[in-house]
Length: 344
Image (cartoon, rainbow, N blue to C red):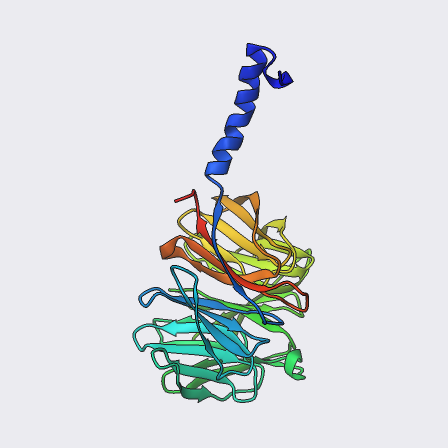
């Protein structure tokens, strides 16, 4: 007989220990529900974007020079769009039925008819278009261009109407690596990662003028961010080393710092469950629980796939989709997706 059940008293003690583990297994923060392999791909995948109404998921295969289209529900690969050079960030505009895809290649950002997938406009800015954010109330996109990747010593932020191509404002950063953008949905501010300088630029989204600079203390190369506007918190992830920082957006104060799975290109906030998901290329997703606006706890490192460092959180579907980049290694590229919360 197993020693664990040699007496009734010890048996009850063992069961008491096992019960929480069983409960945790049934309520894991992420449940892997699908994988689609993409053989023949090299390099990195970048941004993903869902079109819920038409059951589509778009993924930028930046080093492959394509945009990949998947069935949002089943994950089946449906189409490869080849009219790109180096696509990065994807914004879907449902009312106009347009796809806006930033592209760091020479022809710049593309605007596509989302039905025919034909390019209807090129947004010609400086080379190196990468990070992009959309302000629905204004109908504008903010696009970062320039930087070291295209042998430029400065980066630029430009406010554009994607439907007309009209440029409304533009500014320069003394930076060769400016990355993620987060917009206040109702306020006047936007937050921009100045990755090579190690700070978050707080900028007026109407004038593109500086409001504040918030240094990141304890790590370098702040690449990813996401905003919790309701609780006035900004979540920033760095690369050297890989850390998650929680900032108070009222004053820029750092409230917490956590170690996360290494090599991250995205971070997601789940407002329904008050959780933060940090996907690392090492093949794990770090999950952090917001206990209240000032207190956080690491609750899990969920296995994903090697190279899965970028993706999208589809809140209305309770799904997290990740693009597992093959990188320069020999593993196969994949789309992997999870149900968020307890198993459905």
